[in-house]
Image 1 (spheres, rainbow, N blue to C red):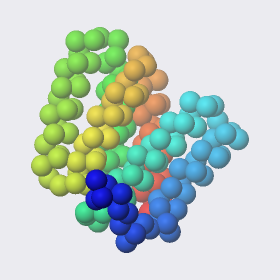
Image 2 (cartoon, rainbow, N blue to C red; image 1 turned 180 degrees about the vertical axis):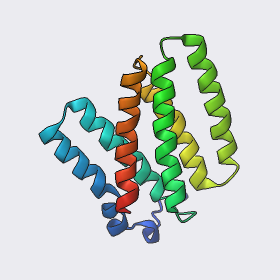
Image 3 (cartoon, helix red, strand yellow; image 1 turned 135 degrees about the vertical axis):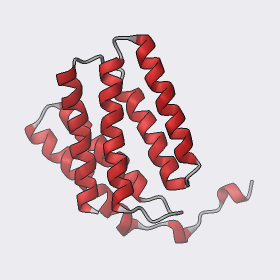
Image 4 (cartoon, rainbow, N blue to C red; image 1 turned 60 degrees about the vertical axis):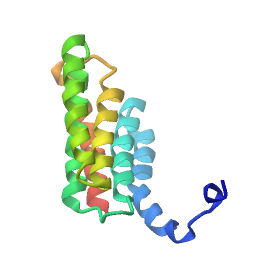
Length: 153
């Protein structure tokens, strides 16, 4: 029980945290001014998920892994949104994605975060059945948010 109450102060990095979250805040603030609520939240979530992956302490987050995360989030969003209306296909796509995410866990903590986030993107954004055009727009917003985060870091 005592171990649960200990805080490793060396793990606290407020400057790195602020840098990681700044693009999300900027996208959210500008979105509130110029875009719809859905666009704003989607852009901010894309940036936020990549920011989380960039702060994994066990491995240095390279630009290629963070870019892979952004692309994976966008692809999962597209596949989830376009397959939602056909339930059996949606379940098959989720099973394939879960298998791939599980394989990423074997490659280390950072890729485990990426695999988990891709599954989450599928589940969250795949709840809204879309035609190909709408699914592509939604995936594009996720990619833009994640890409902004990668470019800023």
